[in-house]
Amino acid sequence: MNAITYCMNVHRGEDLASVQEALEEVTIPLREVFGTEGAFPLGLRLSADAAKLLRDSETLRRFSSFLVHNKLSVMGINGFPHDAFHDCVVKERVYEPDWTHPERAVYTRNLFYALSHLPMARLGDHFPSVTTVPLAYDRGQEISDAIVEELCSMALFLRKLEGFTGRRMCLALEPEPDCLLERTQQTIDFFERLWSHPLWVPSYRPYIGLCFDTCHFAVSYEDPLNALRSIVAANIPVARIQVSAALEFNCYTTEETLRAFIDREYLHQVRRREANAELTCFPDLTEEVLPQLVGQSGRIHYHVPLAWQGSTELESTRRTLTPAFWRYVRAGGWPLEVESYAYFVYPQSLRKKTLSESLLDDMIWVRNQLKSV
Image (cartoon, rainbow, N blue to C red; front, side, top):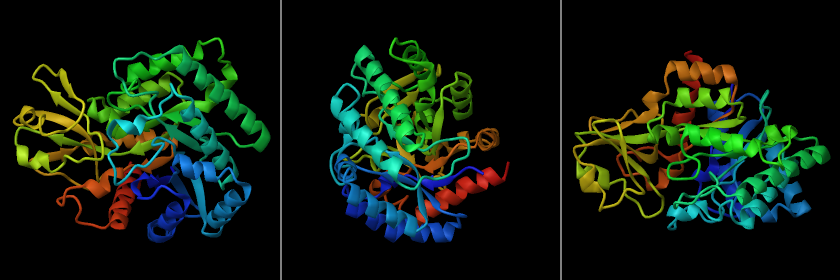
């Protein structure tokens, strides 16, 4: 059975004390109600400051002991946001520093160091992973050789770390709208380029893979099942699947309804679908964009609850997660992580439940889909 958890980037607070507080107040009670057998698999989120603190052996020992004592294991770490992720203007800054800057590699190595010393979840044929930005936010730039070389160096680092610790781990790039890695073919092309680089050796392959976020592919109108099959067929390691749904608007959606989803914190890329099935892209959901969406159909990079059924005005891309998708996911045994970081900026229409209730509903929904196929 696939391991099921949720991504802890939904919790406020950037320091290690805040992470432990979230575990005590939300995760541990959630584990008891959800009924996981054995240790509960965590999708930790550690900021750069928290990861740096865990380089201290005594701090790392205490945190590891806390996890063991509370029957918690680590499925992976979200290494996407480097700095503060809540209660501030994040927007495009979420991608900074990207893989063109050495700070990204330093942060990622610190995360892997922590992960290699924490209790790891048992994931069958898969390995714990650290997710990361899809190389960089696309401001018209190309993927440089420096980025490719940095990932080759990261693969070598992970192979050496496995030699020292006996633990295999994977760096999971996470394609996202408007980034250097967004669509399936872009992703496949990049990995083929990576694998053909002179610094790359075949034994590196298990160490650099993908975090497959179903919301991100759906925003670009890619069928999640077809995208996942293509990636697997290209022999790209899939470290984990983030199960999430995007917001979908239609000809009945009013400007007022969409306005409720504008927020100052996060970037919500928009894809308006034209009559010829072509997509018109907007970098964010803003007041200026709203008039261009009314009476149209499209999708917004806005993670809505999986348990939410939608309405006449607004729908969810969870319907793209078909029984065939779940059969394929179940057969692949990939670890599954509910991704719902936008909870604290949800409009009131979606915040009818506490965070714990919302996370539990989503995790139960995922488990039920797996059981039904």
